[in-house]
Image (cartoon, rainbow, N blue to C red; front, top):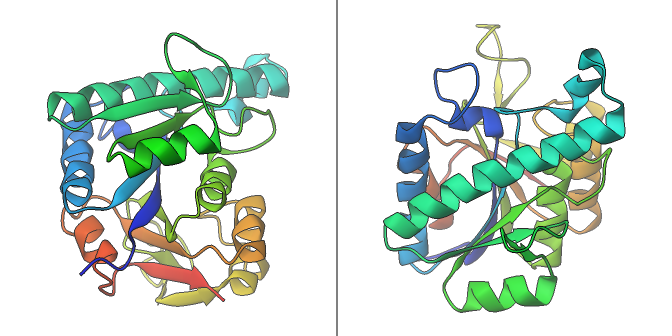
Length: 236
């Protein structure tokens, strides 16, 4: 009954803020954690990459007087805060979770390596990978694509506030039309903003399927891993 046995789930930092402009809304965090626990209990191996935009966005750092590299490093540290929060909630629900960091932050989290992360997944632990790729100038979307490829995931699941990819922002344009399926080339050529071009290109090169879906529907994650028609699929 499981179509996707190993996934990388990309969560935005902004989604953790809920209705607030910044920070972490505990109810939202628990809501996401329960969905993740549900599919993990079902036998899915889950790795998670979280953004840090609810705390600090590196791209906005330059407008606040920081150079891009410093801003990106600050954004990486923001992802650690979000990752620690999610790890704590998952463990409070009885689900073992291990935090890795793309930069050395012991004892907060272990230094990421593919081998260690794969071993943890095979042991039934939820893997949370913070600090993006560990390099400035790369987004956490690109980091999620990279980790999906490295960990030989069956799919990269991009969680959003809407039920897929549209021709325009459906929250702003009532005439926006949903795509049920896109090729990598179409997503890149149409300059769709749901992920950056680097992330799309990495997935295209490695034939990594992307599923963009609404995380606010509590049934969507389970439906996706069972192969049901949810969201927008980006593939060949």
